[in-house]
Length: 196
Picture (tube, rainbow, N blue to C red):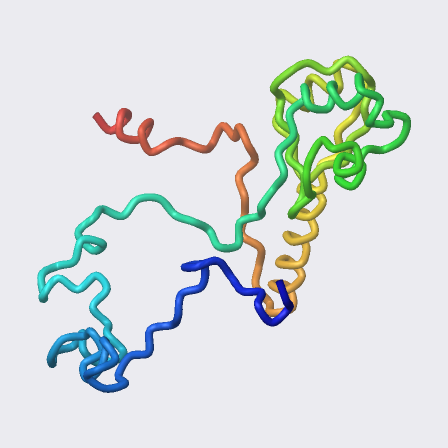
């Protein structure tokens, strides 16, 4: 065998169809598109068009809402942390942040932050810094002698302060807020019941 004789197996390489190259080419003249009509031209825009009838995607009920600005959080359960501690991958002496969890193989990437969930059991004393955590997870960590710092709370307070500062610059008075559990707050249902 010589270098100039090396070639692909029969049928391994298929030649490109050359349309519109005369009647003898196999796909000449109309190039397999038929005669006339929208589909024989370029730039066809039929898609979901149903001849003027209300299309299916408009007939279907609209439910839910996808917030384009929602944060994508990496979720971690307590049992995942405990497994990493037992395997000796997670150092529990200092503060544990998202980067430490990635290095330990607990999560693949930090994304916009880490959310701590409360499934499982934790035995070690952990000092976690996460974006947010569930009430059950915080309770379990604190019961084991650890602590959870939620970055979300600080970020929300900073955002609220920024809005307040902007409103003050415009001369707007901050909206009065009723404290939680205020005795003066009456629900709409209680008002309706009292009216009867």
